Image 1 (tube, rainbow, N blue to C red):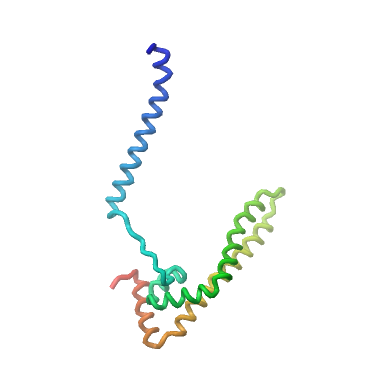
Image 2 (cartoon, rainbow, N blue to C red):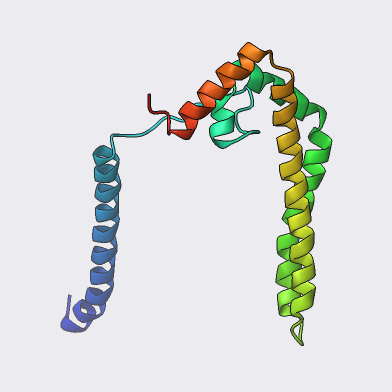
Length: 158
């Protein structure tokens, strides 16, 4: 190999070497980070509907309560699906409105107001699902729910 070919090959070889080193360091970093954080965590999916009423309220409901909330949600699913479809459309509306010249902030504001109305409707319906379940509980079940809620609000500490 003559000097000209060697000089042309060296920059590409250096780039390839640096890229390979970066990839190896990335892999080592991911593995070390996983080990340092205690290893991979498994996420259990709760088919009883924990995701419908989220946060401490969702954690405070019993498995049976979450199943009932899921059943109520399924009855209203077409409405939820349509409402979520509307929510996805707002992003594209904003992107389109931002490109319009001359810029019209009021048009974007109107889209954001409509988006907030839909978000509020979704939140209201979720709260209705939760309230319906609490209303159906016996006094003993409500007391147990309140105890679990207080525990969830403390972060699960005993």
